[in-house]
Image 1 (cartoon, rainbow, N blue to C red):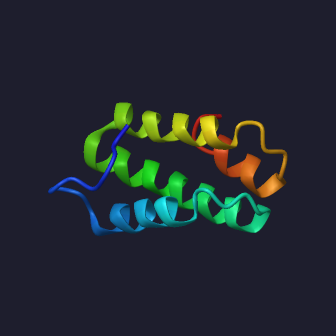
Image 2: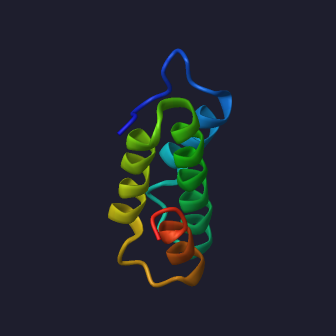
Length: 83
């Protein structure tokens, strides 16, 4: 998985990583949904820039973090790209 924005990173990926780093430990449902959405968007942009294998690593991180979360908004985000 990508950790930290690389030199050829798009600015939006850096923003998504900042959201994840700053708010990722917060377990309140609304914040979890925002972080999950940021991670999902990071996966989309990572896939565009680095290919599907890197994007899948991001989606797997979403599943690892939120896979057991039963909040509808979070569950939806975690499964949006992987099916």
